Image 1 (tube, rainbow, N blue to C red):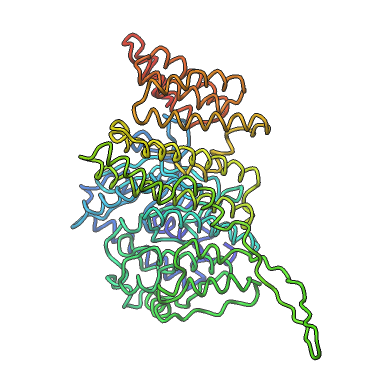
Image 2: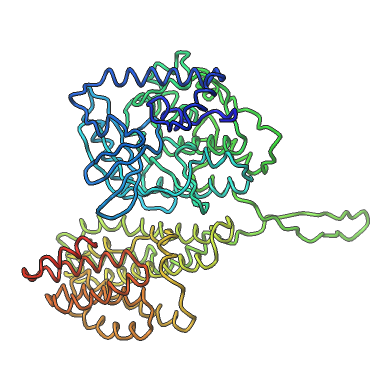
Length: 627
């Protein structure tokens, strides 16, 4: 191991007997020569033995309780478990194979200790895992599936082609490269916080860096569900136990990255996430922890006292980054940044410009040179202006009044549900537009072409909201009755930040075609609104001629969208043969253009339409499986 101390994953794998044989000899040799690592491994090894011996084997599932050694396989539901990939305080991660979708996945096995509160912990884990599965962000590891076992929970996640930040950092990295990774992670955490999700265990081993530099955060929110205990309830805080004295189920998060208020017994929140993020960034930049302490008790004292180390001089870190770290690592939570978005902005390079020298005429005049901060190329006001004609307090009030007139007996309840959702959608749109601009013009982590695609995606989402607001402002009883569908079916703004999905949609069209495509997509937004409020005949009348126009443009993504909407309109009116024909066109165009989301939707339409004929049930089942 060349004198480098093993990371948390290697230690966990070794203490559980899962480290590859080729690495075990080097690991053991290092531990024999390193007193600190020896203490950590000894402590974790004894805890693992206690954990296994104290469990009720009759209540444990072998699939969760016993990780898969190298060279052995077993099934977990439909998944074939192949080999261990990593380990940590909250479970073992395996590489597995999904035969139904013919792809490799990563499966985290999270085991619950048996005893009082076992069911509560299991259900808590399941709730958090489901919440994580709903979070879609390009810098968060996607959760595909969640399963419940007697002894714990398993999460089926995308298999990231990359390495942990801990391993990535072992190769010499520039400050710019490190900041680019943490900017991506910071934006992911900020988005999650806006949706009410807190990570609670941000650390380098939970950050994965892909082969193309894309960073992703794993294990979002699982620390809270894993235990209801805090560090203050752990005997490890007040004793002199080593930092390794952290058995699964006793700590919320990893001690080295834990905020002082959590050490003191408070519940982890967005501000403690910010603290953990800054510890991880400091450690990655400087190669050492920001607070001293080789034992948990010693570390706790230093963290709670705010005894921040002076950063080493061997690495030139910009002053703005040092200042941001000092603020993010403040002992008092209210002295940190207001949110993660503010912290990420503070980490970005400032663009300074020299203001012309001003000579003051007259006797004894002195020439004064001043410099000023240039305006940001992405002011939030620009994003707000892009949206100002779609969502305003006046338009909101008009929509509410129209609903009240259309359905006075129940419209108040309808608005109570959809009003906040519309306001939140508008706020998320503005944030997404602002972040898209910053990614290209301030952070330099995104090409101009990708920016154009993100802006186009956001424009289409804006048009859908415009149509929704227009329909609500002229609401009749039918609109009032379907208002919740109108809001529920608004496009997912998060997709406009999914760079992988946006890049898969083929090359952008030329300028002339782009204008016609934009016009057709504007019409599609209006048609989607008509379908949502039950005006199916009007929708079919509008979409039928539009399909011919889209076909003539030879733009496959557009063709898939238009024919998918045509299939939906025909289905709503009971024309299953017509819906099948349109859905087949949509399916073929989606496959050809790599628009997998539309391909899945078209396959669902085909399964439904074909399934109306009992004699064709086998054919319908094929499309259902494809979907």
